[in-house]
Length: 465
Ligand SMILES: Cc1cc2nc3c(=O)[nH]c(=O)nc-3n(C[C@H](O)[C@H](O)[C@H](O)COP(=O)(O)OP(=O)(O)OC[C@H]3O[C@@H](n4cnc5c(N)ncnc54)[C@H](O)[C@@H]3O)c2cc1C
Image (cartoon, rainbow, N blue to C red; front, side, top):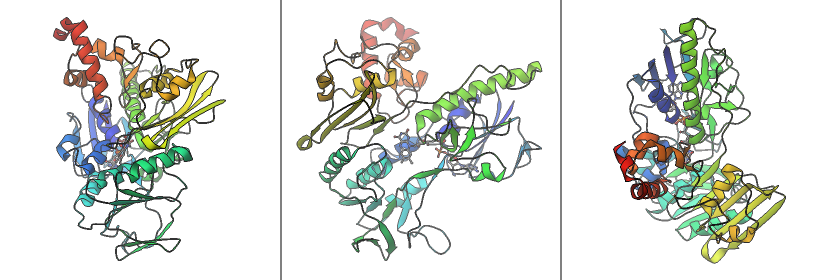
């Protein structure tokens, strides 16, 4: 089947890899370089990675790099005049640049001292800036990651319009603990601060404060990139509307990743994007099989995407933060230790975890994430869970031997302990190659290494598999 993918980011590249063997695949990528691991850009900013470390696996497809696809004819089913049987939109999201005077020039381009934080090109721009007063505008996840990345080079100011940092993930107490943690790293946090203008390297706030800001990194959220979808008349809400087969309002067009809206949700995260890529590869396999047997495509398709359960982790050096679910439980427990930068909050309903925030050194983060993922009842001794002193008998196991097969180890790729055991690998690179575990944010590498070491001890023969 001829499949055209528009967008060569994290979702498009994963889908291309999954489809390359069975189908005739063409991919359009507006960025001039091969697909890269976008979520490691903050590590690039911090100097923890080189550009080459970000490369995603290449696949044997017809790649059109540096080409923005605009010419789609839904009736003739062509892109740039070339026919497709199925078209996939994986156009991602774009950074929001707020309408603050001076951020952009008359021609609409960003001011030379201003950069967004979305692409490799943005990172190059930030890293090549010569100014010595970096300011990050926007205290969401990426803004905090950017500020942490820049903090290695000297003092940084983080300006945020809301009353506390990460207001979508944290409550005010959690936001305050995070601000203290950042302050200890040389980052001055200004909350409730409305930026009103930028001129001559100075950012002016609504209260009259003038902050030297060079470079100024704008991290004020993202919006699904739906320009093309809208221009060809697809149904679009906050993203391209798709059903459980990731099919848009045209039966031959699909959408995945940041640009897709599924059941009222635009995820903007990589784990759902990769889950959607895997489901869509299955759907397109069935469509191809149906076509070759003469059935109507889509009839009897057995593969479905039903949504993802999200855990947000901040992956900046020296900041441990996990937030999940909703904080409106029947039981609400919290613990703060400002001197150690620790905060934990649990929301429990019907004896199960509805949401949680964990900041700082919290030994039960793995246990709490498993309880949330698997919707298993929380232990009766809530205090131990909150204080990080849960007994092994009461909790889902942290040690590989006792960890259930269904426990998710790599969240970006939804790889369970069972998947790792069954893949036969006994080293991290072998497991990464066979399951993709560790290839997203890399946050699970220690856990995967622990399982690999344990397997090598208890089942070394499997190494030959
Ligand atoms: C700095 C940073 C850190 C992040 N950290 C995390 C994290 O820790 N965890 C997490 O889950 N997520 C994180 N994210 C979000 C994650 O990167 C996205 O969810 C993921 O990249 C979505 O993949 P995508 O393919 O849908 O979109 P993208 O990766 O944005 O790729 C879309 C591609 O499509 C191209 N495109 C758009 N329109 C066209 C067109 N008409 N023709 C051709 N090409 C087109 C774009 O140029 C782009 O290259 C982070 C993002 C950033 C920027």
